Image 1 (cartoon, rainbow, N blue to C red):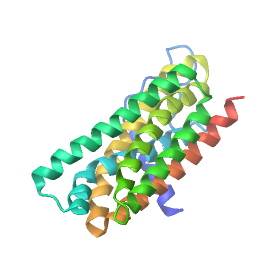
Image 2 (tube, rainbow, N blue to C red; image 1 turned 30 degrees about the vertical axis):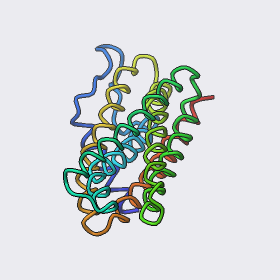
Image 3 (cartoon, rainbow, N blue to C red; image 1 turned 45 degrees about the vertical axis):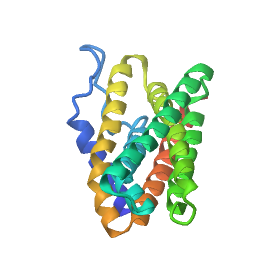
Image 4 (cartoon, rainbow, N blue to C red; image 1 turned 135 degrees about the vertical axis):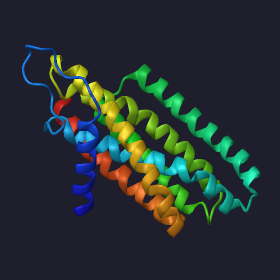
Length: 219
C-alpha cells in the first residue's frame, strides 16, 4: 500500500509538471491529473513503462553475467537481443493497428504477455532459451499495450479534453522511463531476480489498473 501511494504521488508530480495541453479557453476547466476518469490509466502507464526501462537498463549486465561474456561480447550480444525485442514490438503495433482490438483487451493481453516475458527472464539462469522467449514476449506485449493505453486515454475523456489526455498519457510513459532507471540498476546490484521480480509486479499492477478502468468506458 505504501509503495502504491508513493508511485501515485510520483506520477502526479511528474505529470503535473509535464506541460500537457489543456482545453481551449472558454471550454471549461482543464483536465486535471487526478481526474478519476484518467488517473488509473496514467498510473498504469507509469508502472508498465518503468518495467520496460528496468529491463532495458539492466539487460546488458544480465547477458554478461548469464553467459559469462566479456564486456565487448556482451554489448554485441545485447544488441541482437534488443533487435529481437524491437522487431516483436513493431510487428505487434502493426497488428494492433490493423485489427483494432478494444483498448482494454490490448492493454490486458499485452500486459499479460509482458509479465510472462519478465517471468521468463527469471528462469533464464536455469534455462538459457528463456531469455530469447522472454524478450520476444515483452516486445510483443508492449507493442499491444502502447496503442491500448493511447486509445484508452482517449475513450476516458470528452471530445474537448482529447489534447490534454494525449499529453498526459505521453508524459506518463516518459515518467516510467524516468522511474525505471532509478530502480532497475540498484535492484540488480542486490540480485537480478529482484529487478525482474519487481518488473513483473509493476507490469501486472499497471495492467490491472489501466485495463479495468478502460474497460468501464469501452462499452
